[in-house]
Image 1: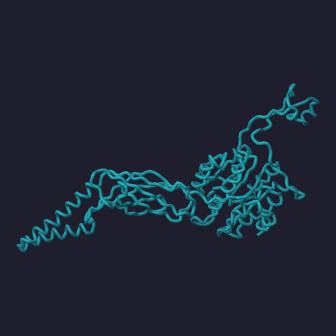
Image 2: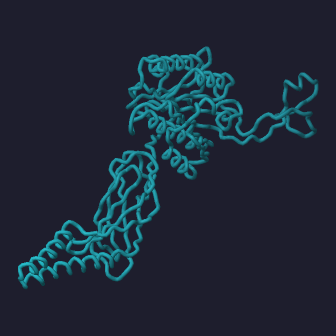
Image 3: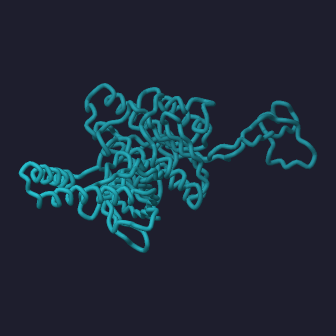
Length: 413
């Protein structure tokens, strides 16, 4: 494709040739022919250089997190012996926009670096890149499309907590706290008669008293995650715009809570109430914790069903978990009823509520008033509750030092 300079040169050459023929001025012939030949040679040069191209992108080894500047190192290899000293690359990572960079020869290949500024959490797929090659005079420009698959993963900014607001357990009526731990991994399946040599630790005393003979508990292995953190991605609960939304705060809170459980050597599952209801078990911070971060990095608030449907008896890992933490910006009577039902059966239950009104979503409306009423119900029943608002310090609001009087004050605000 001719550039503006190339079109001008071609027009000038043609004009000089025609003027020489019209006015009979012989010296204009070589000028016109020369300019046309220069453009033709430039076209052949650019066509010669537009050979197959291999593009390699190198992202930093350390995991980029939300808000970081991410440098992208680019290396370009062209086939053929004749190669340009400089080419222009236009590269694009999804919604991050297009970046243009001049690649210069470095160690046998063309290379350069560009920086993506203030990148937000998410998954970004590398789209079709283009290389623009020009002749030395800038008369002809050819663009070569590049198929260079790849992507960029930007993780949420998770905070490290020294403890959790729910560590004290659930409060009972007299203000004391009861521990909600129980043996994990086994359920009572049935009872049977005691056999000689069996340990008395498994005796089921109510059945023994009723039948008048020793009865023991028959336990079956019921694999489940000891703790489950549920991130509500229901599209109808999101408040705010752009990267400053209630869902982004929910993502950070869910990751921070899950990290504490995993750091204590406990099994924890991360369940996202999105369109796919994505799930990732985590056994340690050294192994599959990275997979949990990847799940959070790509989480989107596109869920079509309310989060309470995940908590119904027999619904899955969330309903079977020993300890459950729900992170949501949408609290209603149905969800509060389900949490209270779990808590009444002495199963670990906690709630992280992200206040949507702090993101400018309908303060004083019916849903906001109902959410405050449900928070009061949970607080009075002793269910550990953490309330997060726009701009809150997660370490302070979710940590072990989050005092209950402060939480009650936040609920009643």
